[in-house]
Image (cartoon, rainbow, N blue to C red; front, side, top):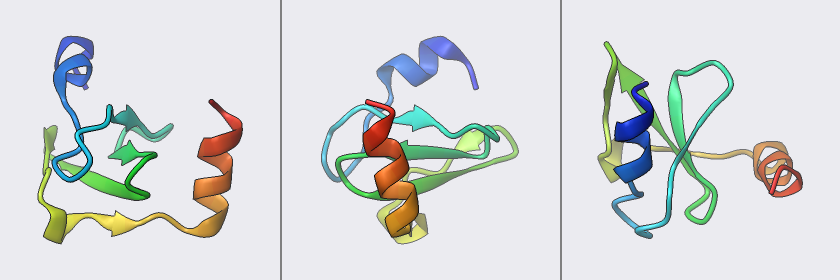
Length: 65
């Protein structure tokens, strides 16, 4: 994921910044508690395509603040 693009992308629901997961396959909205997929290098920022973060994932993202 291009760093410049990541710097300007925000969650379409909360308008909060997004972070790239460690595998580079999803963009995480900590505030929204969802993960948006990256398919063929393209972020899919549709609320209907997002998955809800598990409790463990939410706790993990909170401890990394």
